[in-house]
Picture 1 (tube, rainbow, N blue to C red):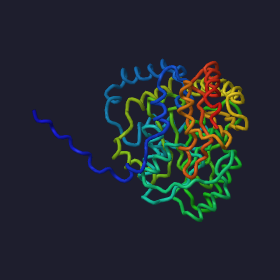
Picture 2: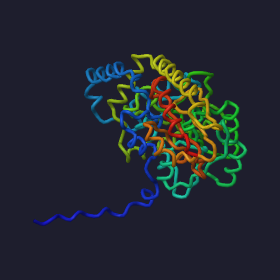
Picture 3: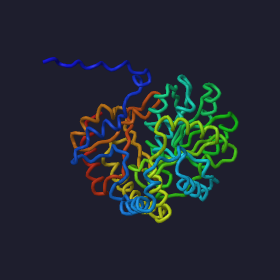
Picture 4: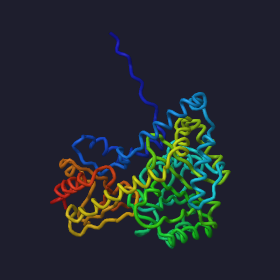
Length: 400
């Protein structure tokens, strides 16, 4: 019997060879056992999904307009959804027309489209330190040179930012100003104004990513950087339903000036033609029939209780000398252990206690702080959080 030969894979593109997979996804694969209390994921709490409301929206569009719901759509997105999104943004202080928006397959696709439309290999992108991991992947896959802006508990330092803009001549700054992933920190209104001022003076483009901003459980909302008049012509604002409706819908959007938005639409045509029609129409129907804001308030209330449970147990779980953030919303907090701890090296030991976190090192574009880690507080109940922190403390003991 002749054994058929298996063809070797053609040489991979340099960008595919250079960019690794997501360490968070790798950790989730390892810790998928049900007995593991997983603080590593960035997943919304599934028991809080409005499954009935979403199902009703899908039933309505499939019963009332099946020919439209199951057909191809325009690349820019369903007009009814874009109009609803524009209205929500306008109410929140950023006057927006439906034609200002491009619907994307999750806000992650928006990052990929922007990278495709804007970045040549070798272009410089400025990012926060630490930075959202998947953004580092998207920019790395485009061949960009990613440079971290020094900062503090509020985000990028405006003075350091301006110095880097002059020195590096970057294509853009990427930032998550509200309840940032991974740290949970939020830029104050004053810091946003300072960053906007640098962008206006130096001609810097800003990509403002806001997947978590509606999940506020204390404090007052801070306006988008995009709402500052001096930079409205040079800010791309990204949004998503993943954290407030359901991530499985894969619905995001970008708001951008016309020429750049059209370039992203061309890139999207090459990527997937359009975001699924039925999902867009169901989301629009949900917005028309249900009170999404009330749903988000309920979710944020539960998340706030879970954040409080995690904050209450951290002092006993983490080694003496540790520090951590106190987010006013979102899904994550960030901890820094004493310098002698390496959270990447410690993770296998900690996982044997059936608990997991994400080491901080992968979130850095430059030299990482290996004593840091990210904890997601939204997926477990307060009781489970307490038990998870007990296990975390046991796993960390003696690990310096």
